[in-house]
Image (cartoon, rainbow, N blue to C red; front, side, top):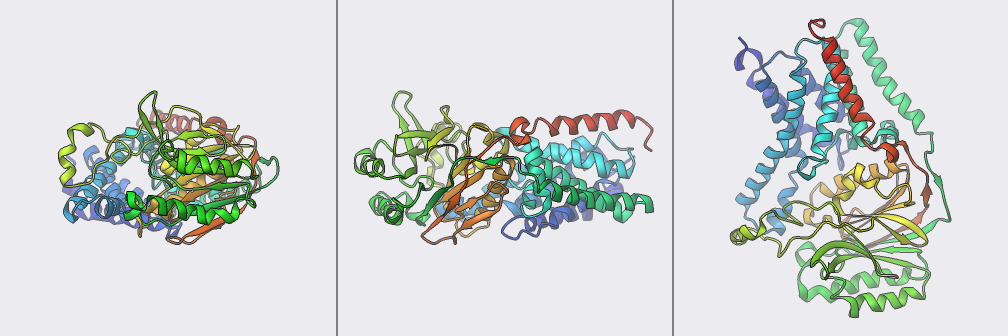
Length: 501
């Protein structure tokens, strides 16, 4: 009978934990992309060992613990430094989050447990890559989703990124997992299998290079000169009412020289911390009068209050015509807290929101400088399949964000990296304005046209080209690849009934 000690040792669990922990170096700001192949390869190699289903689930969970402990520890910054929780409570909350989100990787262990007798090459090149991608897909929507640290996001600067217009970042995660499986096969396979594995790895990059030569979308209209206002407001001061006028004036001072030279000026998320309605007389209306006579449009981040529904939205306003987009995908336990009225007692330990923000149900695109632009707020740009809503009508993507909650951590660099994938998937420029970085203008190939230093007050500006047309990913999102991977697993399972032993 299989036993814990006989089939998989504590050293195997430790190796899985360390491999998951090391995975953080594959992503920005480190961006050592080969790590994205090496650490899953270690994990896949461990999964070749015979073990009970429970052991396989635990192994996946342990790898996930390392992955998210290394890659999302920055949550501590917002809970402790800006949420008011003490060191021990903040640490406990981060640990609880890591342990919980790591549970989603147990789906990998569950799926692969149904293929105990397939040959090593079948597992490494078919079963494990498909199970990994389906697991990442599941994590991207389960309980509102957390699509951070997808393996594909590590490949923004490799030829593999060229697959994104076809099947998105999840598809590239599948390719990276396939490459990781092939890497293991190079080490343990027969001479023929090693040759095939090398061809698989080389083929992935060769085809990616060729796809990079394809232009899925084309320019439409004239280039727009865009100015992104990064005012660098300290997060600890941002919500203090006594600094409200000073903070708004700082944005205006940075913007003023660009009013007649830029086509589009964008302020970051919650550039004004009160509602547009409360700021209508002293901020919004005066700015509207200025921009009515200028050849410039202004997008401003703030809160929008809808009196008819008594809802508050984290929003973007087009100041010229007072048109609004509100954030649709909210952050749990940040912008809304389930059963908030029953958790007020926690206010003595951690800062709780005054009230919940509502999810937006209105329009997605706003007309800016004569172009329909797809709006998004904060980490909405992490959701590739949601960002294709409003396309192909929109000719540009706009994201306003405030990563000041994670000042000094690796989170802003990670966020900017995954935002680049939204540009690649849609074949659109992405204009990203943040409070203290990373603000950037990103072209339709995901390349950063221009950016500015973090934690400095700067204006990031350059020309951006509106684009039209549809990439394959705009047409079918994740509903092309995910069913194919599920079918592949079913076919392998059916064919392997006692044959692959």
